[in-house]
Amino acid sequence: MGKITALTYYRFDEDYLEDYRKNLKNLCDDYLIIKDIEGGLMHAEGEYRQRLYQQAYEQGTKWAVVLDPDERLEKRAGKILKKLIRQAEKENVKRIFKFNYREMYTSNEYRCDGIWNKKERVVVFPLLEENIYSNAALHMPKHPLNSDYEIINTDLNIYHLKHINPALRQHRRDIYEKLDADHKYQTIGYDYLIDETGIELAKISWKRRFTPKYREYHINEGIFSME
Image (cartoon, rainbow, N blue to C red; front, top):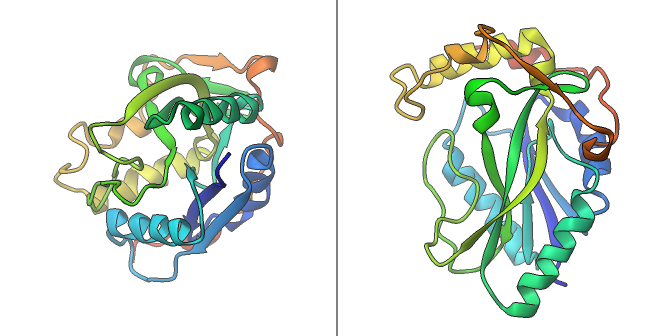
């Protein structure tokens, strides 16, 4: 099986990285973790990620796992994904893998009402020279856009931890409103991130838990700067 590498970059989320590595140790052979020091409130996401992908490709990565430092795969994902990757390689087919995206609101519950129950991500894919990626400055799809890829729904969960902290929910809303005031990159806007109307929470079952367990992470105060 080809080399599997976890790819991410960070600016203020360094404290998440220890558990990020532990979460992926049963899936990934290596990590490519880059500290974002380019300055400014935000850079062009598409260009930045493509440089990261190119570096991983040049280092021999065959499969990319693209999660942010504050995201976790459910515990059983490593075994299931390795089986799916081996199958794709054996059959010599181009496949990318889709996941349910769960926004955590407590240490063991995620939001499941309305739009929250429909979020998905494609974050595991082969790194091929012919891959085509989005150049979007914000909210880019992380996966290749080539039409000849088969998208496999794994039904596995990705858990996003940052929404457990109400202050970080508010900050996420505020910073995206500043970066995308005209809602060019997300037509529904960002107020929904702090709207708790009709909120419903689902508890993670033992079978679908993530490890390590959630703890209170230190967030660099610089994250709250709007400069």
